[in-house]
Image (cartoon, rainbow, N blue to C red; front, top):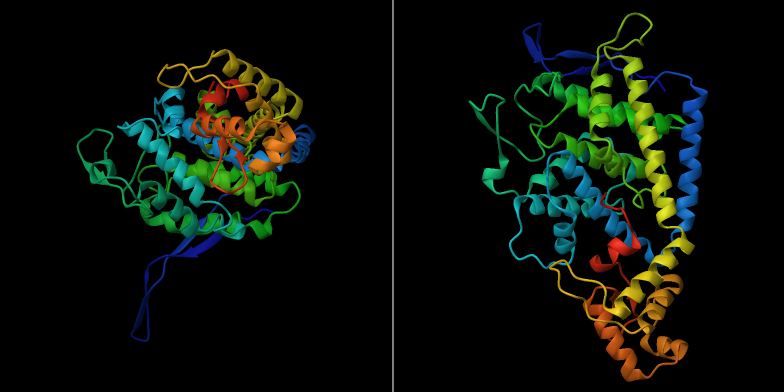
Length: 418
């Protein structure tokens, strides 16, 4: 799929037989995907498909929702870290545990980011809408909707002027991002119309959808449609796009984690893809095809690295070993909460309850009692302590379900925030 030289109408005055109308033709001369044949790159794209199938099959259905909930936190942490948010993992775990009364600006920013991800669930947003202008505007609006007025002000580079962010609206002023000068504000609607057409899901087949996942990330960042928040919006869009093209495991791993762990490379390769075309053999659009190829290769390498890491992390046998370690530490009284207080000891039967719910799904209290051969009173006491520690959901008169406790994250999922 190659779409270039698309024309969009904005505004200009035309008069004919005393009838006037405003029409402006804007030529958008950009290649939407890297036009290159590379056996090495195509093999990596096929590896993404293989890893996707493997990871999707690895995670038990019983914990998928909990893992995806945890990964929304991870995604928010890393996406905001790229933008300079210095929130510490310990603060983040306390945020999830809801044990912080007065949340800092950084924590509130991450909290909003998590909430936006929930809103972007495809149960409410059809996959074919992912590249549409209204959808991308909705991402921006959702992120800024709850901000207080002071948080909606940004200053010019020389701090001489202040501009107000309008949630969900394109910028009305020129901006400069490092060495990059994005399109003039009056051209942004035309570029975003091109974007919606170029990355329409129905047009993407075979390996082109994998090329598009990288290219669309750069092109949206290059257009820079909003006054502020473009980085976060672009990464949230990419999260949605990855799911829309059929990566079933996405949500169990995070591109933002990979970008943040190689942030200098991330910005460098985005900048390389910003370069204008370098002569007649560097594509047909206004931007360098070689630059887009370089960014695509970087993007694909990050995806494979993160998929490999999370596949290993969630591999059932290794996960079970870490579960055993966690509950042995709890039995010995060797773990502490986010405030440094020792966690209450748990009997070893708690491990059996956790594993039963993890691998076999929800159970009633009576089913657990029969399976584990413990007294009703002892089971009730253990369930009460596990529920307090967010290890299980234990609603009255309903089956028990496993959940991922903030206290357990560092043991069950090592290096997640490193």
